[in-house]
Image 1: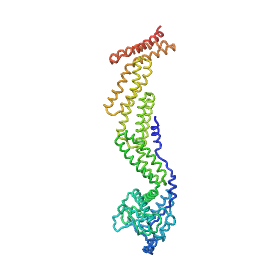
Image 2: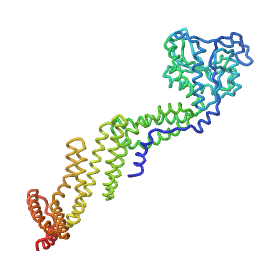
Image 3: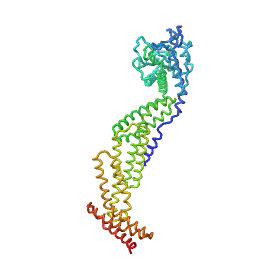
Image 4: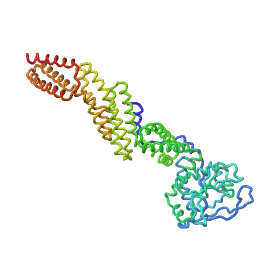
Length: 520
């Protein structure tokens, strides 16, 4: 079996990858994230500058909105979500600071910004929820700074906001509010006092009854936190490579599945190596992503569906390639090696049946198995033809001993060829294959079967005489006579081409030698 096939079969063992964070996790550990859960229990309407040196004054902090259905205050909701975000980011290796961890604080927007500045935050996430007089409005949008006070951080903040909205929408399946889900702002105090990139995700509208209730569920909050954490990863480029390669893998998967559903094993085989190479590449990149939950999500999105496609087809591709290898072996005249490889093929087929039954994989289109069985029959037929040519050469040479030496191998492969042709779909297909491969071999066997049988019987008699069992040897003479008579009758009816005289002469000579001993 060639190296590629060995690798394919061994590859099935490695169904589940094992991932360990390494340099990417270390990269995350060097990043500082500041989370600012918006609002607090009691608002503070005392005024503070909207920006450094600005004469515009705004209230320090409000208590926020409230759920129309749940009656839950915004400051409670966003702290719940922020704590989940904190946990996910810490799990991924980030250093995380929270501006507040409970509701009874008195922190103005300037205080919050300065807290994050003091922590040298690489990114600040100000978690809020939205409200509107229009109860039909739903969705998520992410605010980011775009004014003159924040020129140095505008571009990076917008990039962070873009990653965050994309990932949150992906994780929650929510709709984007405000058009593209991005909202540039110049008037937010917490932005204008920031010295590092900052974003403000408005995670949904508490003024919409359905969205308000959903926002308070643990499952949806987990999705929001997961999406925001993924957005952070993308912003710092920690899983961007894995996701980018994963998307390429999904493209290849689509082409691979298309070939599968078309039942085109030739195309499946052509795509297999590049597809599995990309799969290994994606697994490697995911293994370098920080955070076990993040790796799990990436594996679920990219690796799992690709592995299912591979596992559905790995044995069929293996059979396809092994059949090709067998044909090559036949072409160079190595019949014994070809026979050995056909035995490997049988073991491969049995293993495939067992594993697929256990794995519960979706059945492949019937055309794939039908094409394999026809190819297998044709390959087996080519092997039989090769053996037949060698057998006929021995007949033509009149060498009965060589014919006898090849007889068992030829008849065994003849029976195997009949079995394999019997597995081919379509009566006309089976008839054509039998005409091409089986019939010529049967003719050769039927031409020589009685001569081989006589030679073998005489050899038994010779052995008996050597053991001085003359009575048993003499009893075989009657069997030999019946065999000779039956041969003459059947050959006359069958109209087979006469065998070379040398074969008859060989039989006469060895029979005479034995008779002299048995009946002196």
